[in-house]
Amino acid sequence: MNRILCCLALMAMSAMGAYAQSGTNSPYSQYGLGDMSDQGVGFNKAMSGVGLAFRKGNEVNPLNPASYSSVDSLSMIFDAGLSGQITNYDENGKTMSAKGGGFDYVTGLFRVFKNVGVNVGIMPFSNIGYSYSSSTKLSEVNTTVPVKYEGNGGLHQLFLGAGWKVLKPLSLGFNIAYLWGEYDRSVTSTNTSINVLSRQYSASINSWKLDVGLQYDQPISKTDFITLGATFTPGHNLKADPECKVISRNTSIGKSDTTSYVINDVLDIPTSWGVGLAYRHGAIFRIGADLQLQKWGSLSYPAVNENNDYVMKSGLLKDSYKLNAGAEWMPNPMSRKLLAHVRYRIGAGYSTPYYYINGQDGPKDFHVSLGLGIPIMNVYNNRSILNISAQWQRRSADHLITENTFRINIGLTFNERWFAKWKIE
Image (cartoon, rainbow, N blue to C red; front, side, top):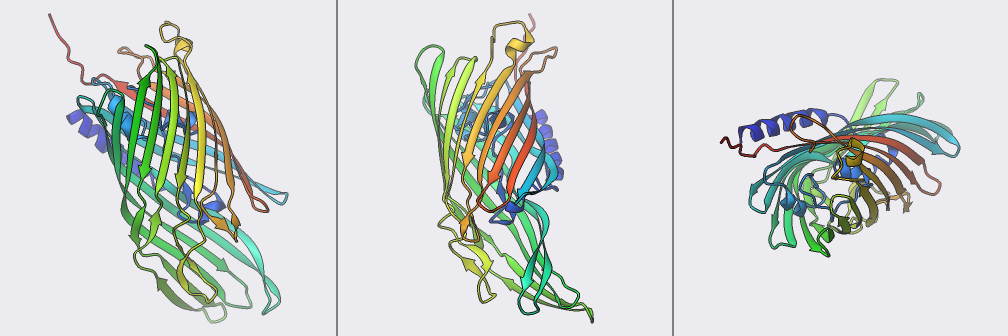
């Protein structure tokens, strides 16, 4: 137990420090709560995020907490990951590139009772990070002024989950998370002959999130299984107080006027559903597909209206869908050769946006991935895995910026038999 507590404390402290940076540099993160983060770990990412129906006793799968019930009774599993990316932006033939990345997640899974596994971890929920400029024409003075857009922040979640095998084929589970974070966004227009006008939007969030999951694992032979997975996340109000500050500064006399608008007890996360289906043949092969829905369309979001009032507006968000599929193959688990134990992974996914931009749909997302799960040999066993994957992601919408991102994910699944009892005869 001391080992567990020390490792969890170290895990939490390292993760908290890593969350000082944003995981995106996309201008699309200025909408809603930002870019929604992938909730999977290393092996999920290599298969484009699929995993609602995956369950194995030697890996952590936070996408469906019902999977925790499959953990080996002798194992303590830690999983941590980071990523780096290069994004190319294209708007009407004008291009530029940007780099990003950082810490992704850390989790720890162990068994507490027969058929009951517990997981604790930390990972992002959303990311905000952008800085760009454009220009707009002011008809009042018949001139064009530069406008700068900046934003940073996001939401993070520290969660505790459990999975219980209720019956031999049926498992249930939950994740309860402390959800926290903040965002700061600004729009600033500047001209030497008129005032500098800036709108600064901010909010601080401290709330909770609940995910519940189900898996039904049906054998069809001694080595073949079909698994059905499902998840549900109830939507609720985050009780945040978003603020808009309008700052007008006269450049000639150096005087500033600030007007502040606050909306109390608003912002929401949506009700979400997910369903997945998977097939596996022993430890050699598995394939799965997930369909997920987030009900953003019924939610309102703070914005400035036609009368320059800061109010909650409907019609800014829309329901979003995500479809992922992926597969994993290990050549020969019984072989003594290292390459025969490498897990080869592939996946693809497609998702729709959860917001509108100037009345039209935001960017659709298509991505593909390839990855390897490389066993780490040591004097005890080769149960630990180095997960490496590459992902290409394209986000695009009519008459808007097109993003092409190449991302490298690196994760380590540390799996050791901490709870084995040694006998001396």
